[in-house]
Image 1 (cartoon, rainbow, N blue to C red):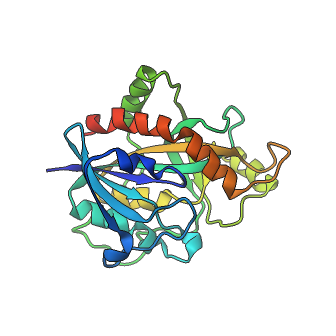
Image 2 (cartoon, rainbow, N blue to C red):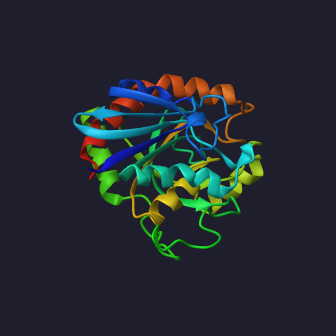
Length: 253
């Protein structure tokens, strides 16, 4: 039986608590699984059901800035595939590059720009996992975005779409870097997601990406950036995100 996988970003982990028949497993008990050390990442795998749909939630993820390789960051995707996941929802906390966004907005990821300098598929390819050169022309499913938009309307949400740029961090971007990102077509910026999405597409999964705009990127507002702002905004929108996920996940096939 196929299942839906969900990766929850910084400060967005409360959705996992809403599943029926929940079972939690700390990442430390799963061989090969990278530990989550970032604040706001619980570091546990939660299985359960949502309206009859089998769901596997990763409450927290690993990042390159923690010292992991791209292959290690993408390892959980391999594990999800082994557990029957064919549809994946990735969420993240992101900085708003697009001036039409504001903190607290939920944005559907339409595409990404990989500025990490690495790719989780570098190295020998196992053809049983996926092709040597996987297509990325629809890395984020159009069908899934339409499902999310319709669910958003029912919830009274207006969900914009945007391009997510991934950078390594952990330092936040400079104002000059944000101007560069806007010039090359980025609407959002963050330090995660892309290795996971590449690995998911390699395995033939369909992906829905949702960014929570937790702060405006450097240079847009006359204030400095802090991780506490990310956590605080995630806390403010967690119930809205959870409602959206509950509406969308049972429709993903």
